[in-house]
Amino acid sequence: MLDDPKMLLIAVLAAICIGLAKAGFTGISMVSVVLLADVYGAKPSVGLALPLLIAADLMAYPAFLKHGSWKPVWKLLPAALAGLLAGWWLLGEINDHVARRLIGGCVLLMVLLQAFRTLKPQRFKELADSHGFGLSAGILGGFSTMLANAAGPVIQLYLLTRRIPKMEMIGISARFFLLINLIKVPLNARLALITEASLWENAKLLPAVFIGIIFGKWMIGRVPQAVFEWMVVGFSFLAAVRLLRG
Image 1: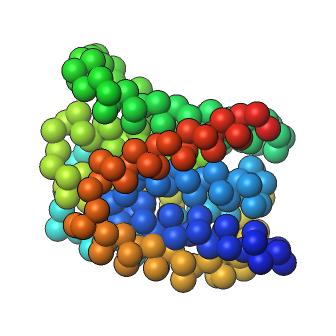
Image 2: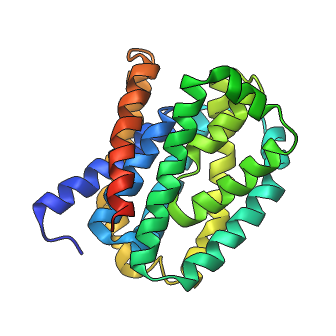
């Protein structure tokens, strides 16, 4: 599908970002969403990214198996499935232009949540402790992951509000997204977003995902995560605005 070396390079960068996100730099998943939407188109990019995400989940899950548990996953799952089905229905009803704007909206919402948590920690704590926050996070996470593969930040924020340590949080996220992404496979296939051609593209990009995971594991103990995430937030904000403008 990709004959232009420049576009192929952007797609490889997106695949590396998927690997970095699964290694613990969750916010950078938003960058991969935007890059793949630019290269492949908004709707096709949703299905194309999914096998790469599952491959990354399968690589990351064993590494974090000793951290976290399945219990928080089961608590989030019913609300996430409701959001997932709503996103699946909507994705089947809209064209690529509308999908591009909705993906931009999802990414922008994740960016604003990240910024709100950092800039107004006390206000965010009050919001997180409010009745129904867990339900809202699950529904929004399910909707965002179906529509844009961009639920990482909202799930991370939910886990942070439960005062879960960093490594446990990564382990729980690995479990949650492995399960949710596997559930999404038949839904994407039903919308013809996973095809033989898209799987060939996945085969080309898979090594870059693996490189991203290895590099991310090396980086996570050496790079100040707060600095890294603010850079990601800034880039993602600009990219989301670009998608919203069509």
